[in-house]
Length: 241
Image (cartoon, rainbow, N blue to C red; front, side):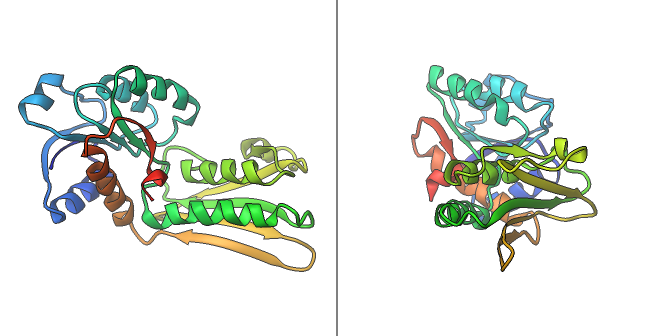
């Protein structure tokens, strides 16, 4: 499989390593604001583009890349509010597109467990729920896309929580129907996400801790392998599972 990388930071280099290890070729590398013409994708016989750039450039990149005859895998976060716009681009241009707030296989299993746990905890109103996440000091968005995805799933299953709250809690306590999301940015933390249910009598915790970026990179390559198999449409990586 011939892959083009859009974005060649730490994640891009990890994706290159995982792709080569699985027998693929990185045939084209583009910086986050350095999209090359569609003809280059065709001339180099690119089969899929993997986009890991920055929240400030992701929407322009996706608008340019989607529909250019090759499918796109997107791992950049910070564009959740524009999801329906991207979906329309994919559908109107008959494109193939896979996105995820987190491409780690372990995190996608966490997504499943998180939803199931919320369903189980729904009748037990004595438990309050909150999310905490930690990432390295260079991460551009906060809370993380993964934390937001976890929170949205909880809200869909837990009747007593109706909205997410983070920045606004700097100046006031959360309302009972708000799901609090806390975050830390420090050092070289690859990623830590914790969902907690707590009551007066006990506490239940569900957690994922990433040791490095390799798991995220491997998942992105797996997504690329999946979408290349003549698939058209707008997909979340979790659907692969």
